[in-house]
Picture 1: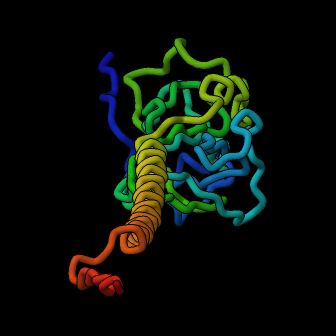
Picture 2: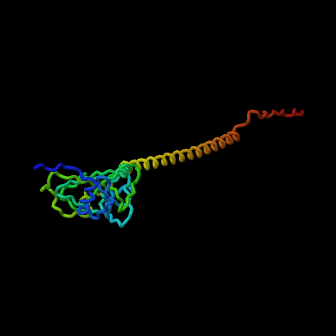
Length: 249
């Protein structure tokens, strides 16, 4: 018996089969040979140096359309809105849309979904760009492709529904990340503080120089006046000697 070749699903196959594999399913989300998934109700963004207490940062619940940012050099877990199912005769591949990746947001988690998986997908992402990336719940930024296996496999996930961001994932990356952006800012702050201190010292030294010069000038003036009082002037005429009158006989 000839086994069917493994192949990626076309847009037509996605439109037909994903009706029972993705919930909620929207036909307009079929993009060529991929399907577009959106940001869901939970997000975790690693704290940076602007966070008051990094140890208190945890998974955040998002309302419909609520926005958030991933700062430069920071890590995040993003949850899909949709519940995704992968049948036992298929394998799925995931990524981020190109226009989001071009901003610097890269997927650093796994790039495939195993046969038998069912649940929301958690994307681990990193902002490698120079500016914060603004996102919101419901924004379509993820892509998923399906590929048929040569047969239905018994080596598959157990079918347990995975929902929400696993707290163990957050625990493994909790705490402040020393990103290049935060380190650069700290270096600039230290450089500015040092420059301000040097400027203050130079200003203080200039002040003392002026005070010293004034004091020296005053001492010189007083010394000159004192010398004038105790040393006779060379130009003053010498006193004339007076002769005594002759004595009378």
